[in-house]
Image 1 (cartoon, rainbow, N blue to C red):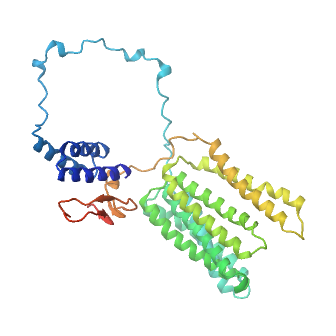
Image 2 (spheres, helix red, strand yellow):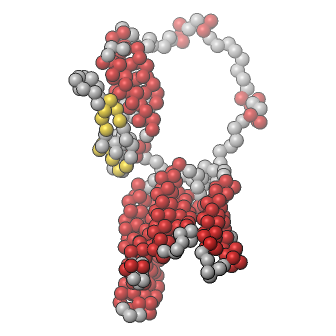
Image 3 (cartoon, rainbow, N blue to C red):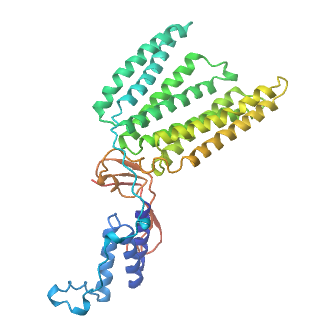
Length: 404
């Protein structure tokens, strides 16, 4: 996408130079654009500019190759042929890592996430049915609904034809949507609105989970994230949620709703960063398990100090532990990424065959490829041609584009 944007800019500038009859420079920029993106949307325009410049300058096409019978002896390369087996093995590049040939059909992941989502919906319904004693009904109904979700979800996964990466993508956004929904319900019913109720929080979790399942399903349909990318989202969202709680300890006097708001920001930020950074990183589930473990260890160790410095009449002890725990989360995550560099290199790949038509969408704010997939992003700015706007200068921005 970046190469295509650069090529669009080069072609736009080449068009300006062609209009100004600066033919040599126009051809040079068109050639550079063609090299940068030989199959993109700007390639045809670049070839057309080159053809026009050649006509203006009287340049003919390259002559056909000389037949072998007319080749002169002086043109024949008589240098000795190097034996390829004589190459120094120490100078050969390292072998490529073995490909992950394991089949991940997604049924197990679907069973787990189905049980979680079914349990959440069942518990919420039971809490409202139970009225004065919500837990007495929410627990058994949640267990039954969770078992039902675990049995039904694998069949839905099979019908959709999703692999584990797609299931984990939808499940991850579903889980963190529920976390954010529950924290939001806790924040809006805190302090001034009275203590938060279990039914209100469960309703927030259910609504957040449902919204997250819808958003995660749309992302899974595009199949942009791998199993490792989903693990990265879970890790960063978990660190953000825990970090929001520990940062709340720094805010004295304590405000209960501040903990929830901080965690909402941390969880949402972790999901956003994971979704954006995931496709550009090498993060397998095995690697992210180690990163999450070290981050959790770094955040938990300062609480051992809390037992020794606790003072009921002061707030400095909470502030110190909150600061050390927040720093421990960040340092543990950094150490985890640092120590696992190179782990499972080359294994964080898509588990499906790539369709060449997935990437032929024109550069625009919202675009559609010929395979039917929609993409967001890719802002393409280019100058207006003087042939189209002779009296004023301007730039164009592609807002919506499609290829069919």
